Image (cartoon, rainbow, N blue to C red; front, side):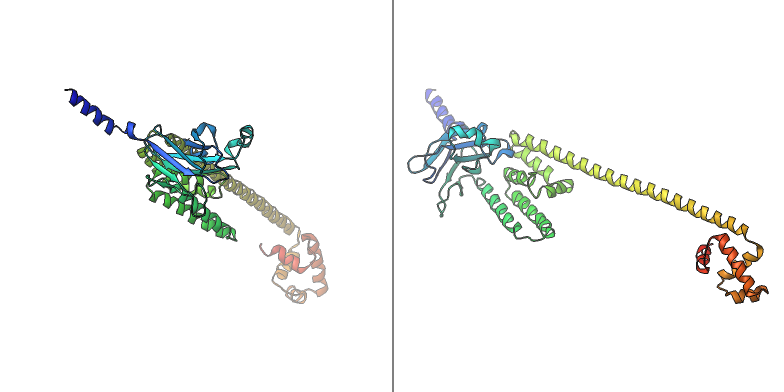
Length: 354
């Protein structure tokens, strides 16, 4: 029986992931920073991916004389999470002031995806740059670097766009390029990294993100992918809360915009109605005035006015009414005074719509 128990214990030790799973994150830094401390951070707030936040730091090491450093333990989550390795040239006395809001201009950092059993190496590049390459047993570890490369290409392209129309058209193109790349990686954390960039309020693409949020089901689908793959991660609740807040903001803005235009339309209708009433009153007053004026005219003057409106000359009017031209002129002068005009043209204009 003892040998059976021994075999079972050995089998348990061999098969238990909690005992043999161990991460190893190693790399090199250059001679200028090899005396600095290297920090490993577990990022559980994706809005604090870039920067230095003491509450995120889970381990720190000092590189050896060659600049080599290594983090190794057995205390990370078994599922993928977002990590940062960084080094800085800040003194302990200056850190509190310099690291305001996580910003540090004297630091070098790299973000990557990893889990407890991963082995990751951060070698020098061909140009002997640090934190620019990820070699990992986890095929998703280096996707952030690829996203950064796309963003860098986007920024370079934007600098060459001369017109605002060109920028708008290409904003949509780059927006879709980033989203499609994220979906093709089959890694929600990569999509979340892209989302954090696109939905950043200081980003030029933020306006387009809000427009896209109104009609694109992508964001709800991403939430489902996060829930399915990382149900216990803090990213799920953070993303869910942010998404709900942004949707509410978009809805309120749409309602405010709709209300704004509704009030504009109502105001225009009221203004149009008032204008119509004013014009109607003016027209009626004008007609009433004409009617009163016409009543003041003698029968002979009304006949002469009708003939004037028919474009008859003084001589023609005199002939038709069997009067002299001078008598016609006298009648015309009298009716001009009564209808408050000074010429035939004014009389015609006054009565043309009669």
